[in-house]
Image (cartoon, rainbow, N blue to C red; front, side):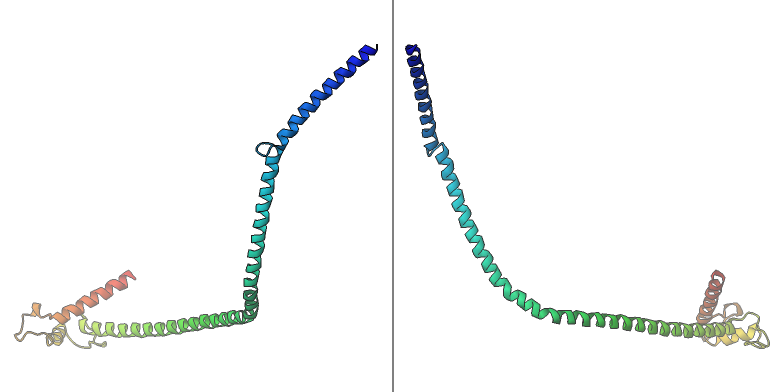
Length: 193
């Protein structure tokens, strides 16, 4: 029995030796700076150093930005009331300008309506004068009162540029033709309107 116990102790010692050998190799692999845990730790250390330098640069940059922006913010706070006042003044001026434009538009429209009314009155007077000269059968009580068609031809004939008397059918001058044309156009407008 003592022999079995010794044999078992020897086997356990061998197993422990083998296990220690494997652990030793694994520890050596972890200690290796190229592939193992050492390489990972070295990489992490390098990354931490880079992160520290980046944070330091960011702190410097932010401090510089703060130092540059602080006077600008103070200046903006000083100018802000003036800008608000200017915006209010511009709004008031815009309202005044809109009111002035509307007033000018209304006055211009009224003046235009007045001139159109005068033009219509003048057109009616001209139409009456054209009718006076172009009446085919004048009313004895009306504007052509008592003239015969021959008299009418004589009235228009003196406007001719011709020195020689023309036959009765050809007595119409350029002016009387223009007056006839104007009368026809006026009658066509009345019919169309």
